[in-house]
Image (tube, rainbow, N blue to C red; front, side, top):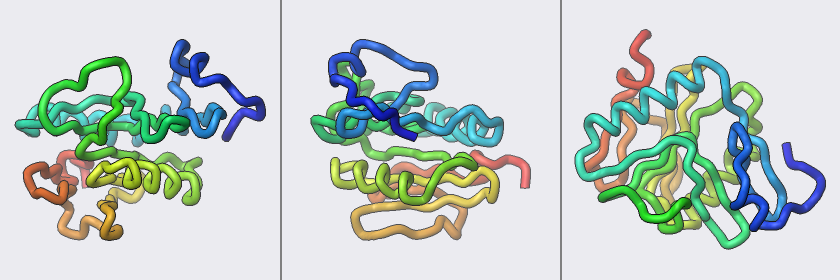
Length: 168
């Protein structure tokens, strides 16, 4: 849900809300977070990459400037190489991970995916913790991870869904 009033970018960058909002065309956009299944999938994805993603840095709920007037906050972000400089990610990371919440609307999720891909992020992983399913979005299109493994296009980063959803 968006607030009605426009917010100056300097106000957004100078303040943090909990949970952090996204900034889209001058409006603050609330993110749906806080449920156990969401947090569990988010944390397990982050932890698996942190422990196994050699050559990658990962973070949770970090602002990514996808355009001058848009800042998105993926649930998990994966950057090739080391930790980015600065307070906000301004270069395309390797992967943005979005974990669905029950209140997410398809059109809003698709808008985020479109922003990420247009920015140059090579893969967007969409995780549905309620159904224990996941999809990989790239500039070539989207596909469900039917083999139960999330991958980047280069194939050097893999997250098995068994690590995200340990209980069948």
